[in-house]
Image (cartoon, rainbow, N blue to C red; front, side):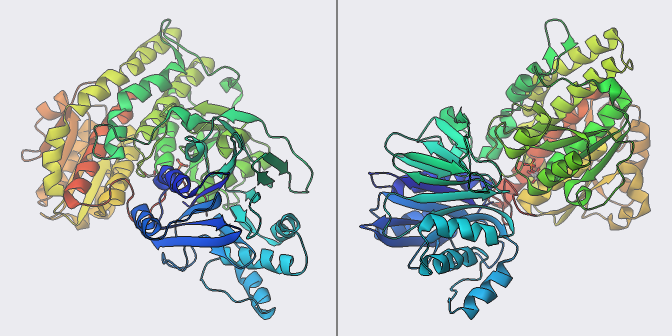
Length: 608
Ligand code: F6R
């Protein structure tokens, strides 16, 4: 999604604006731009495509101002062209925006009727023209922004720059995140702590409805009614974090390889490994024995983690669970009677639908908890209980390490819940804790299969379609495996519960259709084996992800095998995720797609 940066300083800002935009690249974008004031006069540079295009433009036509704003745009209203790229500007104001102005059509019609001329198809330009009209009517920049904000419907983060005002930036947020960075003799605005990390250690996150006036001397924050507001400074998370691929070719590859480490970190906040006991993060404890029914919700990969979480919670803690994708949950008007607890899963903590679902659950009186990776995110701040995944910043748009950390947290939580509810004995707890503690070692072992999987990916890269099948714990993984493949290689892939094959998708099987089957030798292996026979009988090409015993069963003669070590069932979703990630990764590399920033996708989806 769009990224915002603003700097008010005494030193030239253009290079630093672009540097910050590079840190926001991971959010996904298709055009970029910056604007600065030079002797009070506004100049803009905007370019379609990646930041190199903007850098090239700035090399040809540099900007010298010491106050400026910058933006990476992920197109929503209007194509990814230079004219639609931000900043949008008039002779009075320049603005960058993340989010959607829902009533922009009505505003545009009103402003056009008043003689204001639009140059782009964006919703954002309505904001620039609205502020311009207020200034034309005699308002100061801050009054103009305050009045204009009241006219806007939707979710947004905004940063404004005013020609002639070399010591003034204004920011505002409703829905989309925005942070203020405190510098020495200079101040910053940014979409997140990662963007601000090279400039300052001290970051204040604006609350919903806040707006802020920045000068070189400091920031004045106001709430939506215009009353002064204090927001606590936090240490910027990204400070020690460099956007660096190390020795890896892509962030996604680096993040796949980080999994043994980050799973181990995540485990450490849920287990006292020395004693083999579960231990929820301090201050975030829950009495699971009081929960009658739980609802889970999330989007995309987070949803597949939550779906696995449902299997865990039902199996190990016997908590009845309902689950819905967040974009449905928030509007489905489901009667929540009998449900007393809502659990949300999100890497970014900013996904618009997940956030809206959390707010809906709160309004319905449910206790809310979030398994979330970005600990200063809106979801982390608004949930009653926060269970952090310690995956570290995830830059590749396709989620990998955040997913396995979410699974790890959900597995650990279900063991804690099972003990509290008397479903698991202390011995069971010890056994399961020991099993989970093996996740780092086993994920590491799976990474050694990289070159085998790369070879299989050569063939996958020649296909147009693929099917992924799994049962039980491995059904959500089939969905996740298919999502990974389609989002980065653009091969059409479907995930199915193996038992559903004969109810429709079997019609697709012929000798051009690869079928990836996730089937460790568990209690449902034989059932899935029958489904594999059905595929083989129709000429389908099977890639079987299994363990030693599954491979030894010789269930299908010509299957390609990816053989993982034997492991306890609770670990399977976590460890079996890795070969699927590697298969998608290598297929995309063979196909030459933009692995870290696949087309049309954004890392943090802050619009509906
Ligand atoms: C897929 C992917 C997305 C996200 C989804 C939710 O690889 O990354 O499907 O999982 O957009 O995002 P978060 O977890 O940030 O709420």
